Length: 216
Image (cartoon, helix red, strand yellow):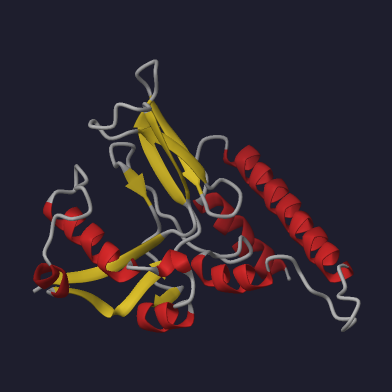
């Protein structure tokens, strides 16, 4: 038990910025405990919602929960997040401990409207990141032939717990936001330059991934 607790503290320490680490570790532990309690209450509440005809628990959004379970990692899981400088635009773990097999996942969720054209959109995104990492195209930049020459190694993407975004604050300092699909998933960002109807765009994070790719 003592060795497990030692590993737990080391895992928390890796998530701090090394300044006042004890206080940050305490905050992380309290936050994780609170989240686990919330999850436990949610499970208990779902189990109390019983179908009167079958007398079996029927959690709300059951199918959705099953489908999305693969797109995020539980906070109880350990994932290293090495230090990077604030000059980096974003930061996710290089871990490959939580793979998601694309072909199997797409087949499993083929009836989900959100999966429509998922693979060509993913290929378009990855090609754009390879060709011009500092700006985003309109989603129709590459031909079908160009997309098919992109190879996702082992047909896998790798799931991560959190994404850290570095940015410059209004008072010209460096700031960082820590995002995850569990409890900090709603984001707002500047709209594209050609969108004059509203200055901001909005999105929700459903998963954080990285992929190893080759453009043949």
